[in-house]
Length: 330
Image (cartoon, rainbow, N blue to C red):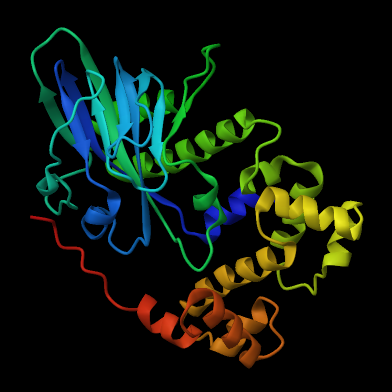
């Protein structure tokens, strides 16, 4: 079981490329937090991650509130804002502007991405593409909490193949407006995100904590694979510890150190994520959804779901089936 792939599938990761920008110095591009534009750019997505791929030139990237120092990004680098924070790209360090909310909408009479010329007529030019990744945040998405607010993935120093090379080809094809072009770019953005996460895992310090570090640890990674491959099984702390070759006490402490919750808490939360998806399927009863993920009774499932999610599964189902307003922002 590939745990990262399982999570990305269960939280319904989807991508979209919105802007292809050719910027001349001096320039500043400020993007709003994705919560402000969610209904306009990705209707129906519960959480939206923003990203920028630098295709040519270089610039500065920063979080809008200044909570982290700006990062210099160059051609081939990818900058991701997993929490959907307001962010700024600029030709000069510390540049700021006001976001134009009218730019963010799903066009019905033209193709994505929007092609923009931006900034001044200076000799230093930067080309970058901007996009979004939508996903579920609830009931449980372990990936979101494991990522920093700003994540920069550098182009490999050895010049090996990298997702920006694929974007170059796709953007060139996109100029011809062939059928399916938007879908290709959307799928490439999803591929890009997975590769960025993989590179992030590889660069984590040996003593780092978090779900991603747990994936890398031999014993905890194996335990996560067991949970994800057979979530409805009657796992106990003792049984998981035996399966990974650790004592009960050592396993419990090691799992909590990396994943930051106990093994049984993680199992319960992941079951609820899977149950949440099942509840959206027509014809699946609340009792069936609970039984499918390992609950012996509907009452036990109701109690667990309400305790963690805050509402009973029936209320959750009604809320998830409500229409989402996807009108453009003015």
